[in-house]
Amino acid sequence: MSHPVKIKNALVSVYYKDGLAPLINLLNKHGVTFYSTGGTETFIRELGHEVIPVEDLTGYPSILGGRVKTLHPKVFGGILSRRPLAADKQQLEEYEIPEIDLVIVDLYPFEETVASGASDQEIIEKIDIGGISLIRAAAKNYNDVVIIASKNDYQHLEDILAENEGYTFAEHRKEFAKRAFNVSSHYDSAIFNYFNREEPLQVFKQSEQRAQVLRYGENPHQKGIFYGDLGALFDKLNGKELSYNNLVDVDAAVALIDEFNDPTFAVLKHTNACGIATRADLLTAWQDALACDPVSAFGGVLICNGQIDEATAAEINKLFFEVLIAPDYTDDALRTLTSKKNRILLKRKPTQLPHKHFKTLLNGVIEQDKDAVIEGAAQMKTVTDKEPTDRELTDLFFANKIVKHTKSNAIVLVKDGQLSASGVGQTSRVDALKQAIEKAKTFGFDLHGAVMASDAFFPFPDCVEIAAEAGITAISQPGGSIRDPESVAMANKKGVAMVITGIRHFKH
Image 1 (spheres, helix red, strand yellow):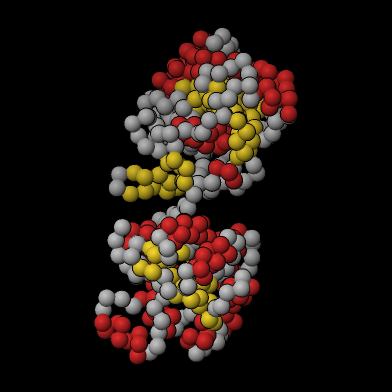
Image 2 (image 1 turned 60 degrees about the vertical axis):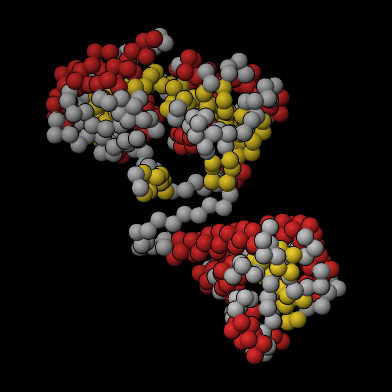
């Protein structure tokens, strides 16, 4: 421990006062003099302690509707003075400025006000000026001053003061300064991002205060942390903590299932759907999704868009899986599914997900809009002599939703609202198609009358020929190749319907 400082004077001015009383009582016990403003001043008096109004120190009242209260040399001089410098000490004496050893201040609730849908003027008024200035000043002078910028730190300071009879040490003050700059930088990022919504400056600023240390990253030798608020998205009803890989799969599962409205169940492995089906009821959807690839489903992530009942839970319970996600569960279903303590059960909450996607790359970050487009009938233009039937068109919609969420190069085969097979992450489109056909045969799927969706155009007509020979009767692709006429000609030759969507869905 180094450089002990006894707290003599404290400036306290906070928006949120919950949890503050025990700390104020302890400071008073150690003989600390309080300076305060407005509601905090009243709060301290109601605790039975003396407090000096900041306006008595500065000689100025709070003005401009409260916009200016603490912005004065008698406040900032007391915070920023360098105690070891004789010149600073002399000026404090000359201008009758007390040394302020502790600043407890928080910030107006800017993010909460934005989230509430308040008017621009209300939001602007929640841009804190005095508070942010006090935080920066006290944190800058951490050598002699303690800064508490969040109610989350009240207890920590209380413990330090109780243990050290009212003293803090340099190590404590530097730690509090680090936490304070975290508060101030996050606050400034939120304000900037609010102003940067229209005609944005091309800069990248993200700040997330909540963090969850994961067991490890993608592999046991890698560290992993999730920054975000999972509690806003899910209630975890059972199981161990989510791992890095679990979270990656859960993200992919949520993005996929949100494409579907009718009762749908999906099974994912390494972010790709290995089984998915839409049916009249969830139980049948589960059974048909599992039938797509029961081998890959082992240890997978399961997701559906309806309430899981007891009958469905009983069938799911037969499989070893990592995570199950649903919007709701019946009590009987939960009793069945929680019979194994490690399996993770998540109940989704209705939450708006971000519209941007970013990741680190090389020595920087790349950002893009999330792929929120999915093509409907209006975007599926028939380019062959043969038109797709209504059944084929319905399956093409279904297949196109899946291929959008499948690693490129991707081919998806679908029949009657059920994934027959997919070729994922291949270095050529022909390989992706051959993989899908072989996999469909392995699990006994008859591809005659099935449809095929491709995430990108066909550079050659060979995929169309191979698909037709396997029994595929309708194809969707985005188009855009100079050889599109050759693919269309092959489809016409083979009697296959082809639609072009105009939208590519690469997913790397």
